[in-house]
Image 1 (cartoon, rainbow, N blue to C red):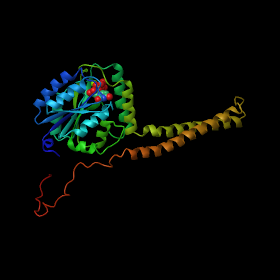
Image 2 (image 1 turned 90 degrees about the horizontal axis):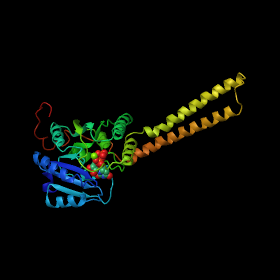
Image 3 (image 1 turned 135 degrees about the horizontal axis):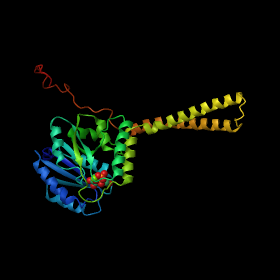
Image 4 (image 1 turned 90 degrees about the vertical axis):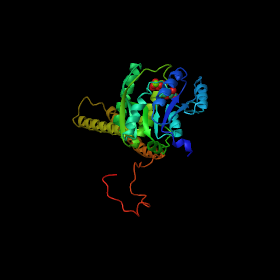
Length: 331
Ligand code: UDP
Ligand code: MG
């Protein structure tokens, strides 16, 4: 690794998609915050296929100021891929991902760093309030985080977006997760490590319009649900069991009516319904079983590491073996 890369302490990763309206304010605020930080910082702008002047402005900035870097993606790959590209290029000991539109105030970075220095490896920024966002967006976001929390087997923190700080070792672990459909906040939660959070009030977008229309939000939610829960796959099994169960119950009831020579019984119709719904149920059940196998294949192809090691003690003792260690109190 190059000599200068080791000296960078903080990397800010900022995805940018047609943000020319906010860039002047963003750059001013970033400049102030980076100046106040207690170590060398770099800001990596990932241009996610912008078609406005963002590319020109950021490219020129990176060429003249060594604190700024520019990565231009060949087309719009989406927010999650953009932040992945930025994190892959980050050189700092702590990496902070934030939006370009100042909804994630750069000043909160200092609080994230304070928590990192207390020994936390991941520091999430949790939204206490969301200003200037439509009631629809707030309601769907609320529902999304609650549902995901119930469905997923890893604890994905609620009301936390992608604004967070991660330690270098978390980044190295994240790089071992090559999955295509990325839901970065879920992947980071999956990794474990020591996590903490800082609360902040999410402000209105400083300028410009949201780059997350409904279809992108739905895509993100689907990715999250499919990547972090196998509940959708199991659904067919439960539907199948319910339908077959009801069919059998109804079948039993029809037989009772028939034995009792009940005049309400419509011959022919009842037996058809029983057979059709029983077969439907069995069909769904089978689909569900196939789903379980598909789920296993899905887990395999994600190629996530089996486990992540946080610390190893006592493995590389070669040098210390000669000098007997004094039994110190922890560490
Ligand atoms: N963004 C991106 N690619 C996209 C959509 C968004 O890089 O396809 C960036 C965008 O420039 C911003 C961040 O992701 O920096 C969050 O987007 P936005 O503020 O529009 O989302 P919202 O806050 O409305 O959910
Ligand atoms: Mg925004």
